[in-house]
Length: 150
Image (spheres, rainbow, N blue to C red):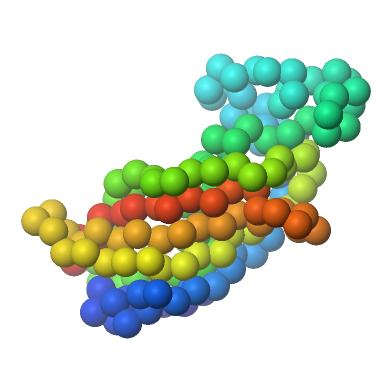
């Protein structure tokens, strides 16, 4: 975990890769809970028997479940001390290049793309690449935007 002492110190890291989170296992229980929370019970996610005969041979995580893991995973890569708060402002350019089969382990790499001062704080944009252990392609690539208030 990289720890930055305030925004001034974080600014020096713009354009660099900040590191990787630990690996995290995506379980069927987590997928089922996400399906319940969102109402998305498509068989490819929640029916192991039917999914076994499907294109991936097992159930897979929802793309939006993978996206929703980013705050947890990125929060294990770095933090900025000395802030009053930091809030999620949104995402740009979200893609899901490959699936996350149940039981897969994923981690996030974070690259700090930019910082921009504004009237409500400093806007931070990062490219977060979520990888699946043993896979050739990432499972999610997203530009995340946060507003940090000193």
